[in-house]
Image (tube, rainbow, N blue to C red; front, side):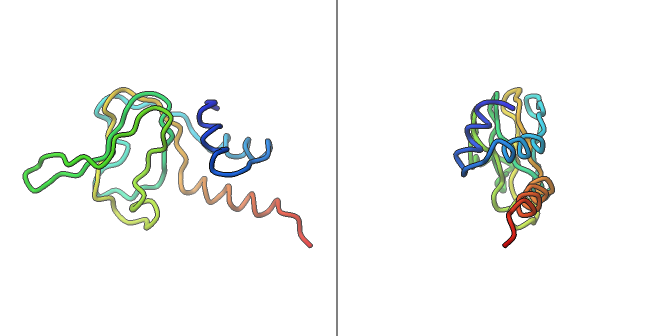
Length: 125
């Protein structure tokens, strides 16, 4: 796993070595070419990304078809459409690669599996 991803994960809370390996196993490394979509308008966001190389941006199209930029994401940052991901409703924005980029992707399914696995490892009284 990328050291910057490990650092970013550890900043969200404490993870034992074993639990960090669980998380590591669920992240999938992917590459996107310039102008590839990570998310399109109308799709439900089923994952989030950690950007390890390149730049992506989030935008919506206005009434004239012009891009209205919502965010620019650079190396070592999390990329997510919060609204679509948390509500599991269609996105009203696009997330697109501005340059060739590499990411680690975690799906909502994998996130739920990690929560279940973590809960199962808690000691019982």
